[in-house]
Image (cartoon, rainbow, N blue to C red; front, top):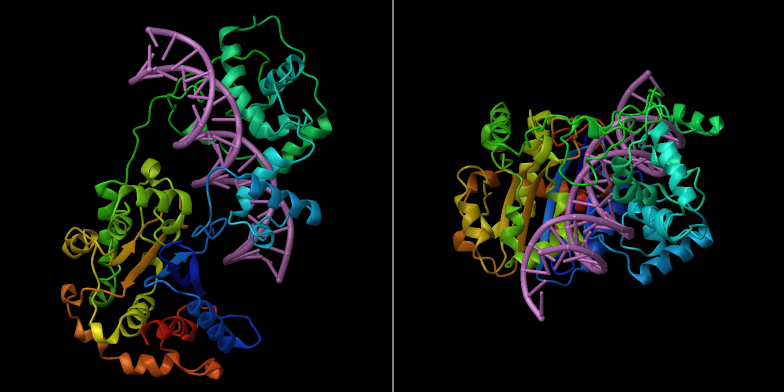
Length: 461
DNA sequence: AACTAACTCAACCGCAATGTG
DNA sequence: TCACATTGCGGTTGAGTTAGT
């Protein structure tokens, strides 16, 4: 199922100022409430630069959180305090809503991890004792890499801590001291705890067993049981895991790109869909928007800003084969609808703005990516990876600046034919529900687009 | 002192299980 | 029953630190 939304970001902070989910709202006041909300958001905007991203992506697996504008990296003491206070007051859980409620610009997942691995009061800090070491070694010989289960035998220790300790200390230790076969180590286990294993039906295949053996020291000494957690047939001796052939690291290959291009050609309305063009997923957009590499890095790594709206296939650098473009599954009428919206409403009516194609012939993109004043118009298509990860997106992204050099823009007047129709339709009052089928996008009753225009009209007025 | 390789560990990522409407 | 959301887990990364040359 497809999800559609529009985002407007503050250029300097890359915070989302307006993030309008284009799904039919469930609010009792319908579109009117939506529109009001969008207008309020837009009024908060004070910079001259605006990013408008219309993204559609598969909803099969939603991202853990809205990545745009969220902080990444090391936690500060202030953040720790905020998180600790909040959890002490409200308890654990509801991680997704926690950051917002606690006033943290973090992903819920990140908050959970920070709490569990670092902030929890019952954590035991400091070096592992020899007893703890022995427990870990024994349990690992039996349980493999089920660190959370191992951690349950070591109060005050986290799975992450144990995992790190194993990888950095114990695995090497064991490697250099192989126990004779006859001297098996007694493994004392609470079977009621191991029953937890059955909770995860069949567990999951260890990624490590499928992926290449990395050269990193943390990877090379995997215990003999680690890849077969559900097969409790391990002997207590820890033996070196047999090496597996190196897999060729796959990159987002030309083939993958070609795949998407081929698929694109299946579109029913090529003329209309050409603005959602296949493109490699390196961040040409970012390069174009930001002047220096430092800016780009800070933008992407710290804020994670662009990642959402221009998300590239997760991990496709490693496993991207047989890539299909997400919009392959999108009805061409949906694309057409997007084009209508974008052409007639999101772009300045006076500008006769056209789309830039980021394909093989990326002349327009090059023009803008080198521009000093950060203007950019990009249509972007990322793809799913071979594993069916559909969190990647196809996005159509436009960047507006006040001092846009309009002479660089190629007219595309034919797309303005329906502008008036769109305008009137988009400004329908909140009782618009159900009127017209033309722009219906999905089966969930997504019909109107007032909020998008509410969010944008004031920008262009 | 300068450089580099190795190490450590907090944090991130993707995936799968589970929960929920 | 299904689709989507949430949670938890294990693998992996990379910045910071330490040890070696």
